[in-house]
Length: 533
Image 1 (spheres, helix red, strand yellow):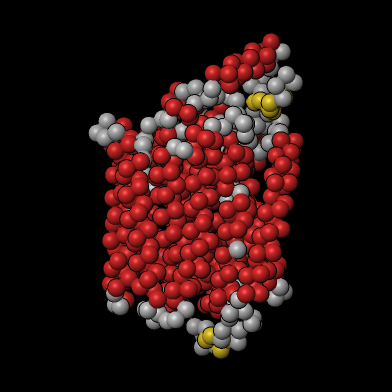
Image 2 (tube, one colour):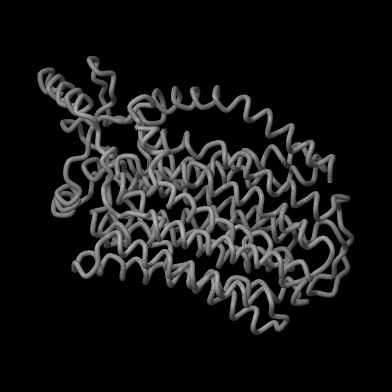
């Protein structure tokens, strides 16, 4: 294990050293090539790319996918909901990708018999612990890009960043079987780190999307619809990966999800746009509704120096979100990476039989997340509860249920009781998504992507440390799973306490652009007008 850890550390060190350079290069590439469409013009006075209202939009006639979808009328819903559904599918794919390694590793380090009765000899000499270290190397990259991703999502069209994240992650997933077959642990670690780098952009960029597309009283519904895809991804990813590994081969899930993500990217880039004003087929009614509901959105993008970093890092509501994110991430990654292993070791279940049961908690959570989003917005829009009260009740109530049922999982030896407790625990946590996970948009919509990057970056530490702690607790036998779930419960009780005391649903004083930024914005707009732009 030490040799693999050394390889991972070397690979991580390389990427940390080039991160600053690659970040600057990415800004140059995005600015010059990707985001400069035919509908963009550059303001020579301000050097800002702007949408040209006098152009022919996004050239719908050249966008064959958009034309096909519009003609087929296969999705007659509002464009903001079309965007949410596509984002849901994107999250579903990318979180399904995260299930692939966990399912495959159980058939990579030891001999096994498939459902057809054929005996297979393992192809690799890596131990389970070594494979777990390689799997967790994903989080070195994932951690690095969180805050830069928030900054990029505030500076560039966040919908395009989201599409790049899912598309590149899917392509890299296609390369992982080749990395394994080469038996080169360094190559596997590098691919995992690269996947982490690009996937780290997904959540912050989606928060940036909702800055322009989500009316305030629909934030919970739209955001939870999109983010439910991450849990639906686990719902499908766990059984599908387990099925493919058992019936086809350990490499099958990598190929399936890789190709699915590449195909999804084509639809995403064709059907989504940065703002309602840029969408060529949106109705004037929906466009006006969104823009009137959101109100004035500053046209100036925050720069590194204009972002109120001190106010952000000293804000108690921000830290309430961060602590809650870490708590939820701990249990999420615990189950995503180790649930099949727990069922095999502690409950003596076969992997091929446990895939559907492993998905059940996440299926229930997905339903609860959708219901919770609708209920949260109903309570707010009808002025039954304040935004702060809604966020605290949903978050603390969800975490409380999850923590309590995790205690049951820790101390039961019965298969049926353990599965039921897991379902109830993860299901309860679905309410918390309408608490902390959309809270960034309440307290600082202008910096929501940056706050998401900040909080998700801290949450990623759970993904880094959870596999190591779990491996340490369980190395001496199945009884170690008691400690694993006790720790998960304790972390959630900590999250409840901190969020209940410090969370807020109100716009923070530091969350609006400074007067000098607004003055610069007016000057820029006047300059464009005087030049006929």
